[in-house]
Length: 86
Image (cartoon, rainbow, N blue to C red; front, side):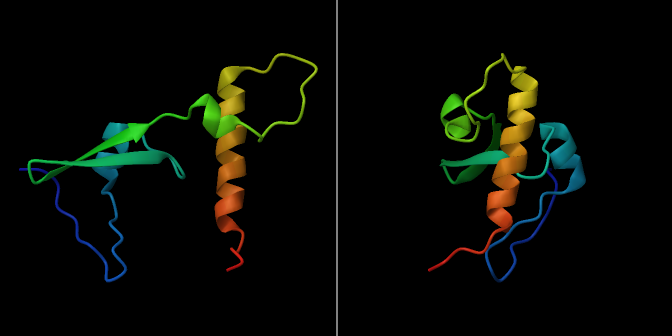
């Protein structure tokens, strides 16, 4: 049997630490959920070049891919913390 969790009244689910560790999840990582034959399947989705588009100013030098991903995650986290005007 898998690990149990519950759904909050807002529809949120907390992933147990053992699951986060197994998937190597960090704050603000992206997840894909697919429902197949009545089962939900969850997987980590790595950043794509499209995710990085528009985040970096023009660079005069090469940037390490790991550093680019780190910066992108920080930028995305900052955007999520900002209030959204409706």
